[in-house]
Length: 148
Picture 1 (tube, helix red, strand yellow):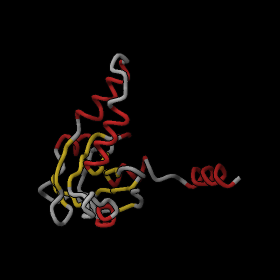
Picture 2 (tube, rainbow, N blue to C red):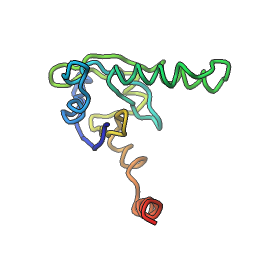
Picture 3 (cartoon, rainbow, N blue to C red):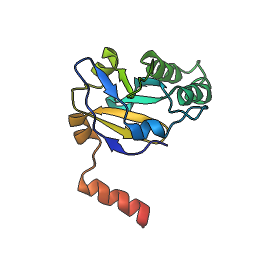
């Protein structure tokens, strides 16, 4: 399971490094950190990423099961699959983030990577601060819902 917040940056070549804690938590069948990843369009204009094994499971269990006769399902399928980019991380956990994904998420040099369970999200740091980080009232409301 992916958790945490990390603040790497995109280098001048468009490379990004997946933090070690996120890579180490996702070993392949051989026990080595997963090096094959898939990145695609995510919710709220972020980038979603997960190891290839998890992606294939997501496709088989969720996407492939959607009836194609329903227009909304075809839109869901297009959304996730049209932006999908499979890559292999180098030994430092780096990969080149494609231009279409960087543009979709309006990424600048400063980014935030967060773990959200089965996948990670990659955000532009300024956008993350506005759209994701809750204000104190929202935090109080969350707490009230969980602890009442």
